[in-house]
Amino acid sequence: MKKFFVVALISLALATLAHAQQPTPQPAQPTAQAQAQAPAAPPESHEYAPLQERELGYKNWTFKRAASGDPVNLRDWARGKKLVLVVYFAPWCRNWKLEAPVLTRLYQKYSDAGLDIVAVSDYGTSDEIRTYFDEHPAPYTVVVESDSHDAREKTEHYGYRKQTGDTRKWGSPYNVFLDPLHLNQKGDVLAPKVWVANGELVERDAERFIRERLGLPAEDRIED
Image 1: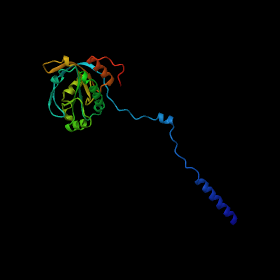
Image 2: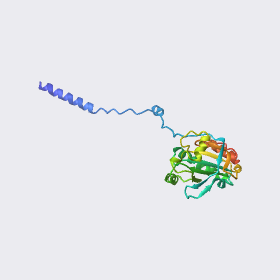
Image 3: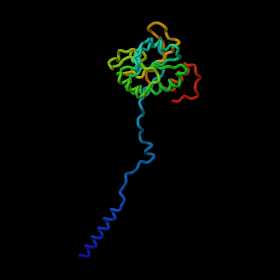
Image 4: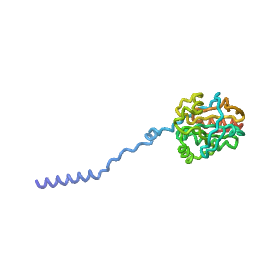
């Protein structure tokens, strides 16, 4: 009987040792095919809009520079330039922040050929304007039309958007191209007809438009 118990204890010990030496199962790693099929992170949500020529009755304005407070009169500022882009924006707006690098690239590439840009801030406080441009300095002029959310339906910007069918709540960014050679030299209305985009510019299309208006030859390939 004693011999039986000894044999049993030895067998139990051997079984326990064998189990302990077995490798711990590892979780299955995803295959390359499974990784390729995994959903990608959602892309940034743009609000692209095509350029369209519209009868707008765009008015002359005088706004203050965001940095210095000095007045800028659009008619005087545009004199001598070949093409002007007026872009309305809210400094806190995500879509403005997506378009701003595009404007910088266009300005840097075509300012010597006669393009100039003036960005008109709306619905953002002076602190919001300063914070944005301290981090992202603009090579072009920045002025202020309004400085609070309460002004949304009181600005010229809002009125133009309604005329051109922009249904967005804030309309940022909103792009207006002007031809300085055909601006009215007197009166409130600066340009009866303009080219507008009710949203972000499509960079490739905007660049083609700019080159055409500046009299530059078409590029063989324009980057998206």
